[in-house]
Length: 152
Image 1 (cartoon, rainbow, N blue to C red):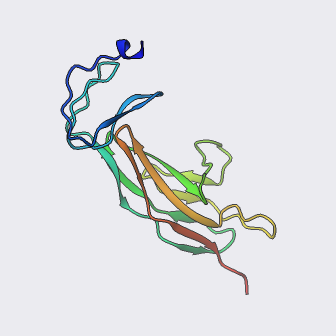
Image 2 (cartoon, one colour):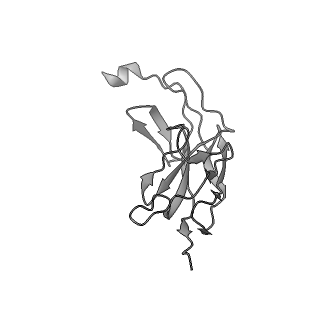
């Protein structure tokens, strides 16, 4: 019954294929060779392409309480959204919680108003990646470690 509701009028793909995503419909796994009509009738434009990371974050050593920035810049069409992950867990930023000390900048970089580090809790120290996504796919940056400088 589901296939009766899906109308695909024209497809031109290399056999990298398309797959079905129950939430958003068809997704194309190759960004270059597609012309496809989705449910809503919106057409995949040939100039659309999957995200790619053009600036990867670098390792940082920062003093407790100081500001810091992990850079990440991605491109794609449509413009990708960027999320950050620390040690495999999604990072909460000011977009999730206005009181957060971490800010997601328009460029995609992660800005720390101050590095939080205590004896028992080290919420900012760890390994970070940024992930850029649009409907054509996702790109993951290289790992970058954020380390808190030890007081001497």
